[in-house]
Length: 200
Image (cartoon, rainbow, N blue to C red; front, side, top):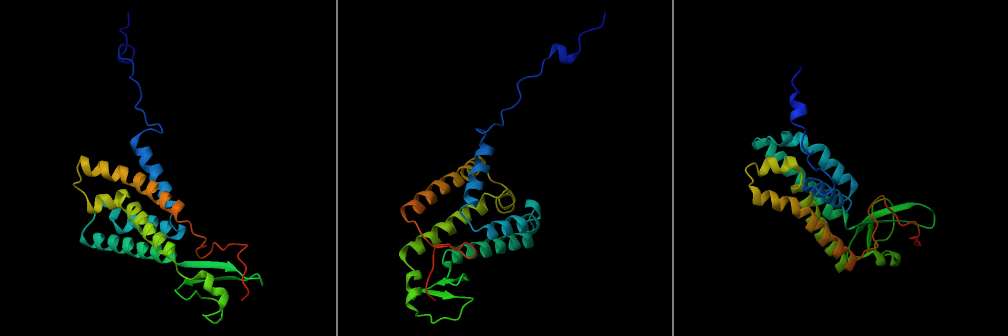
């Protein structure tokens, strides 16, 4: 008579729970929410170049320099992009530029910088709030990247890992709260307000 097999005498235990409540899934969801608050081009560039620049987290000194450079470059772009604006004039042309204290400095249209219709695009306190929050969000987004963590914090302990896991969630809540309190009508380059006509 054949003896019962090992699988019959030792039934498999319950599979590990990797559902939506798993900490890893929560972290990934929080990071994805942060990415929605950043310029799409910046996120794509960072995610495309970071694995190569950081050597997939196995960093030498040169890899650390390259990774730091791409983080600084993308952070500066996020900061400056909050000051850009665009609209469609009544002739149907998309105009875009960067906001100044005198109005909107257009990149693709010849117009007097002191034109009265550009005054409504001048810098305000809210622009600096959004610039600070965008810079904060990208910094947290960058530090949440596994390659960046392995590159700059290879010996992180349990406390540091717990901080990195919960930081995106906290940053997302804080940024959403500030964006709600300080709303802006600016449209970054490529995202013009279709109803934002101006006589130019």
